[in-house]
Image (tube, rainbow, N blue to C red):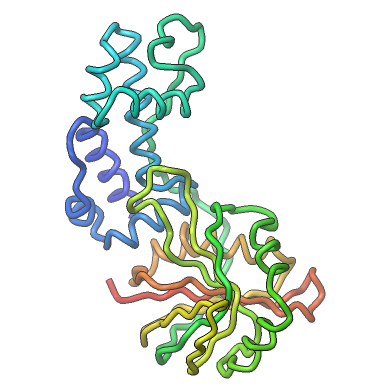
Length: 286
């Protein structure tokens, strides 16, 4: 997998001054647009568009230092106006493009290269299940991606749930695990230049439909899921498993991601050092 990811990086590098086509990325990588961008984001901590934007601004820096005009550089790197380019450049570097030749600090964002790291043979427990269609009913908030530690935005979202909402969700939660779940979906990086973010949902799984305006309902179609049971220190074991799914399990498996909510839950009655959790990701055969 990583070889094909490096081929995509090379394609991007050769077309930073041209239009980059998602169909070509799919062809080179051998993966769907969604799978590639989701795995790319998890492996690098960047959305694909953010990576492309930073590479363009890095090369634009060299062009500006070489004496090219701001308007010319802005046009070359696909900006509709010099103002738009100037704002993006200042946000990235901290200085206006017209000032770059006068500062002693230069800004550089290197080309990525994916490489394998050999790790000790630590087994991963998982099962493949076909699940019937279901609904997720709960509350949502768009949050920034965070790969380590407890996410304060998720904590704030959980604390915002009223008792009435909680009781309503409990009343319709008629599917396993019969408790609060976390679901993530609508990952950016497909249309956004900004830092990675996603829609996070706290709710219950249900076959029912709820018409409350203060609760969101997401329908998930019947499909195949990879389920990863985890017991260990929370939240570290959960986050470590997320990382291993994307960096180890997916590259070695015969499956690819399907665009669907990624689901997890934890049993908070267990002690933090030995807490049971599960991660569900929707998949299909490559």
